[in-house]
Each structure stands twice: as structure tokens, then as C-alpha cells.
Length: 450
Image (cartoon, rainbow, N blue to C red):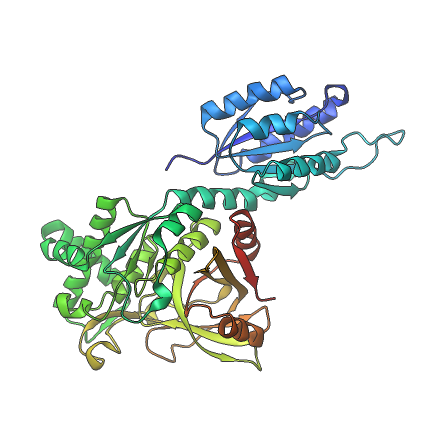
């Protein structure tokens, strides 16, 4: 995908333009150039409707993905609808704090200008966000909104591979394919399980050696897993990468049981962790809404790696819960690398018979738990922030104990009374505000546990 491109317009009335007002524009541009984006702008303030129209032509020719309207001072009112009508991308309204000039002159009236623009954009059904801060802090102030807009753009170009469909009885993994594409832009490619398995069976030579090397490097030690199983895992990893290239995929939802280990000889758990570690989000059990949630979290966190989990236990007294899955966590999230162990699966065929899982507990730090859920009329998202605690490896698989910011009892009651799915995505980043902004922008009901 091309680099995210932002159009910047510093707005002012011509009669309000002074060296100070012009300097605000240049200070903002100097800061914005620290963002990982391309900035398209004029070299002077935009003061008339005609100038705004010409700038819009420039934005459109450069293919901007979002526009920043910087209220260096109160603008000519006609500028706002002129821009909104011509540039069909999300807008950030940027206003600056100010103090009176000598003589009591209020030289910018910046927030009032943004307020007027918000009314106009709302009336015109345009997507917009509001940012408030000093011009020289423009990059840090607007980074959250830029992340949200970039996430929306990424989703609209996202292709997920649904390999084998959902697992039996997991109605929580059902989804409306065209509804998802219409609302969020996500394309789902249906892929037969046997296609990936057959691709894995063809892996040989350099690809097989590289796959085996990457499997061995994904853990500190091996427990009971055979060399043959390690090679199968390496070949499978390579097959998933090749399949992603074939279909242009940005992630997967994988039917990891019941037949996977029967037709291929191992469970794909450790390989799923490796895919996530390679920043190719992959959910278990054919859960497309889960994979979409992971993709959203990845984009909003600046490319960090999520973990697809069950919530398996909780304690109201200390406001904690344990999230877990059976050995498919990405190794970059491990508490200590020397704890990572490639093992036989604890459940497949009764347990201890076939590989390959990567067992370890996850690292501590700030986290955000989320799950996108389809409703009869649209989508909703559960959001809960917290702190991951230092967690001993007290069970097989990948446990993580979390102390939530919000009330644990309320979280459990919300999940149970409102019928949320039993899968969640956890990311080691505090992105609650970004998720809320994303939901607002995409007309998704946000359900936040405070």
C-alpha cells in the first residue's frame, strides 16, 4: 500500500493574517513532517474560497488520504464547505490555545473557527476528528487521529484468508461476508484447508530448510516434539506465507481443528503464533471477526502484535482475569525467551500425541482487550484496558493475568448479559482512545468497561 498522505491547509482571513499567524502554519508543518506520512501543502495560508478550491485540486491530484484544516485564525466561512465538497476524505480540525495580544486583541479565534467547521462538516455528513494543541506540537496532537484514519484506509484494503471455514459449533465465528465488506471494506478469500496442506507437502529444498530454521528459532527448547513434526511445522509456515502471497492476504482465520492434525499430522498452533509474529494476524478456529479485531488493533498501535485469546478465569476481589490460548501466541510477546518450549498439543487426540504448540506465559505491561461483534443492524465492539501482570507459566499454553482498569464484575456481566463472543484480541498497547475514535468514525457501537 502507498504511503499515507495528508493534505494540510493553514486557514485564515486575509485581514487577520500577520507574521505571527503565518508562523503558526510553518510551526505546524515543521512538526507534522515528523509523522510517518507524506504532507501535501501550499507555502502560504489559505485565505479565500478560490485559494481553497485550488488547494483541493492539488490534494486530489496527489491522492491525499486525509486533510488537516488548521485554524491559524478564524477563516472565511465559505472555505469549509468548498473543501468538504471537493475532497472526499476524513478531516482533522486543528485548533490552537491562545492568549490575548497587547491591547486585548483576540488574534486567532482558533477554536471558534474549528467549532464553526465542525457544524458545517456534521451537516454535510463528513467524517472528521478534532485535535487541540500548540502548533509546534501538531504531530503528537494529531498522531492518534492519523492512526485512526490510516486504520480505516488499511481495513478498506484488507484481504483475509478464511482457511477451511469455522470449526464445528462455533457459531461465534459466523459472519456476514458482504456486510463486513460494505461496512469496513474487508475482503474475505475462502481457501480450502487442503490447498494449504497440499502446498505444505510440496515445500522442499531451501524453503524447507528456512521454514525449519524459523520454527527452531521461535522457541528456546523442544519437549517431546519430533524432528519430523518440526519440519512439518516449518513447511506449513512456508505454505501459509506462499498462500498469503498468492491471494494478497493481510491475515488469516484458520480452522485449526478437528481435522487439521488428521490430514497433516500436526496441529497448526505454533505456526499460527509464527504468522502473528511475522505481523500477519491469524486467528484460531476460523474466527473472521477476531482476525478483523486483530488487524484493527495492529493498525491503531502502529504495527504492534496482537494475541488472540479466550478469557478463562476471573477474580472479582482483585479485579483480575486470565486470558489464554493453547500455544499459538507470538513469541515476541513471551515473558522470558528461555521459558518458550515447543511441545506436543495438550488436547489434540487426547493430548501429548501430536505437536506443535509453543508454550510460554506472556509479558507484562499495558494492554487493551477488544472484540468486534456483528449485530442485526451493524457492529459493536467491546473495549477494556488494563495492565498485564507478571504471570507464571501455571498452565499449558499461553496464559496472561490482567488487572483491568474497569470493574471486573461489570466486564463479566457485560460479556454474559449482552452475549459477546468468547474470543478476544489483546494487544500490549493502551489504545482505548483510538478504538473509541475508530468506532465513532465507523458508526460502531463502543461498549467500554470503565
